[in-house]
Length: 222
Image 1: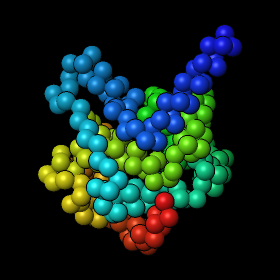
Image 2: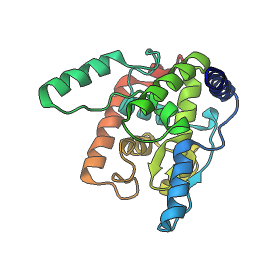
Image 3: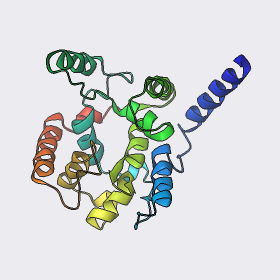
Image 4: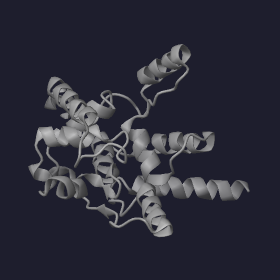
């Protein structure tokens, strides 16, 4: 049993470290979406993803995502303790626990795991988050996130999303379009890029404003 555990840990660490240089061909969430479509027979559109290297992604895209999801991304080491404290305090007053996941945690979850709040999954998420933060530079974490994040029911990654929703390559995305993509990340099934609700439009506007306040220098050191 101990030997099996050691082998599992070694393989997971080796896989994670190798992805610093090797682009992942897919992710756990993408495979689960594909399998779900095949099983329920209801998916009329295939799951799409197109890898886009960092150099082909305009600066407005990662800046919008960081502004929307994880503004302390450049300085934390995988876990935003400030947001965690805020979430715990909010739970104490409202009884509800809001999310405080960082982009690094979301990469760990989307790439290797499955949805849910079970303690086992959260523990594995923390384990992979530490591995990722120890072995990948911040720019690589953002690059992978932008290529595996879900932007629609069957649309994963900024490459597929750019063509699907704006009919152009990601290099041509404007800051306004980048903010709209970032706006749907909390729930890309309910919130839509191609038919944005008033809430999504307002959220995108706020993200764009926050990205402008942060400025490109916010990510220049990655």
